[in-house]
Image (cartoon, rainbow, N blue to C red; front, top):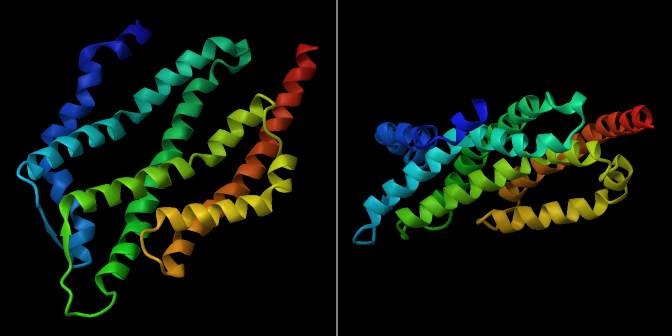
Length: 232
């Protein structure tokens, strides 16, 4: 029953319906709030810009609400390949993966986005007015949120790969320097502003996550070797 229920149409449509119902709160209370705080004026430059934006917001908000369901489905799919003892961890991993993703989104929303918008709003001369295209703004918010959400999954990815013996803490330690360079490059690409402060706002948390991933990998690999011994 459980498996079929999650595939049913009402279950899939529910998150989008919730997002649709609360669309005004999502738009004014969440999406447009960072711009208002930074005193940035937003404008729409397209004929159907506003309706299209509302449609996109409902869709993405629905996906974010549905993340626990989506992840649970993925883990259910992987589960049959696991040992009997490990069957139970699908639920736990779903919880932790969702938790990491939501922490990432929150970090982007409450730390990264405000500091970047503040920088943009106060940069340079007052003779140039900041009138930001709403689609440009939406693209920026989405990039920040998705990038942070994915980067905050590093410890989980490390856990799963180490659990299957595909990743070792030694490997992560050995390539730490390379990782730091890649993190700085990623931060420079993600950050639209050229100032080093905002790049560090992105880079430092990713580096901390990398270090956490090493610890997680060390714990997880022990379990992998214990499992191998019990199998033998």
